Every structure is written in structure tokens, then in C-alpha cells.
Image (tube, rainbow, N blue to C red; front, side, top):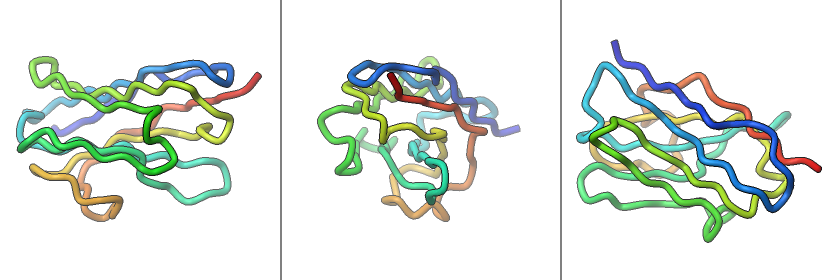
Length: 124
């Protein structure tokens, strides 16, 4: 059974850091791209970052470039999202999702399997 489980969310002050994890089971992550998406209250879900399997290419939304870093550990079947210099506008539920091989931009319909999400709250 394919499953993605996010963890690492929580409450952090502005300027702080968090590292989210997306643990995969039921399939080998080596062959799959992982995207991170987020949904803030009252807003549509949006793409944040993605890492491809084929060449490890990474992609970031303009709003997080220079602050977030995506990485993967195929041995652990896990993808990470390191979030630094967090801002209140980063507050959202963060989801990871997967599709075969390559990232597909922020078109959520291209990502077949989704996790349940982890809450990130940035507040003083």
C-alpha cells in the first residue's frame, strides 16, 4: 500500500526554522518525484518545492526561494524540506505528494499520491 507520511510541523517564531519529513512506504522512492504543497486557511493549495528522481533537479516557488531547501535520502525513503527564515505567511498545512520520475510544476492533478499533511504555524 502506497503511503506518504509527513512530520516535523509545529509552532515556530518568525525567523525560526523547521525541517519537514515525508516518509514513503509501499514503493521505492528512488523512481519518484516528491512535491511539497501547502494550504493556508481560506486559500487554495499551492506548490512550494519539488525534487525529481531522475537527476535530482529541484524547484521552488518564488515565495520560498533562498529560504527553503528540499532534499532526499533514498536509503531512508524520505524527502526533507528544510525551512529557514520562516515568516507568518508560511503558516499552512504542508503536504507531500508523489508522481513518477519528474516534477510536473505545480499542477496538483499530476501528483497521484498524497500525505495527510502537517501543520506549520509561524507566530510570535
